[in-house]
Image (cartoon, rainbow, N blue to C red; front, side, top):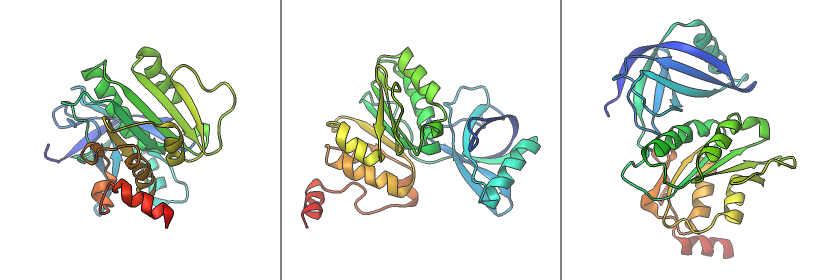
Length: 259
């Protein structure tokens, strides 16, 4: 899809945690069209466009959802929060990004996100469940502490409504007893270490990742040792922070560990 610049209306701003808030925007349905996994850019001023993953699949109702992290120490974060609360209309540019759900594939989905990277995965999960309810989905979501899993209840709802969905929560600070449930798993530590310890063969999977370049490539390195197909792994990081090769050759990883 060709990117479009348009004006849309702020319908709702809701705090999900003290640090994350959800925004609902509305515009002309055809102008708000996007593929699951894409992002928009929001205009803060003439020289500043800020990208945000779209956290909802396209539904032809002209509405879309964003999840925004508030960083008090960053001046443009405070500016953005104030603008969203006070403004009735915003200028946005969409859609952007090539990390989109392959609707032609029925391979199992492994989705890996950190923080508000969950927003991108939410759109992909919604679209995948809508298009093919029988497709297996494994969602891995990493955060520093449990309260940062701001949509935990939604992830649990997906699991409850479909026996094809599993949810793996990964927290650096760990979990209290009783978090785990059927197809809901708790992992303590870093996301790449959790994948290495718990994940099996992914050679037949489509893998999507959303997070910082360091987090994404640490996970890709682990997945490479688990049979990751380089043609079936997707992340926006590959576009704005590429490395060569994106997916390392397994033999070279073994050599690096031994040297």
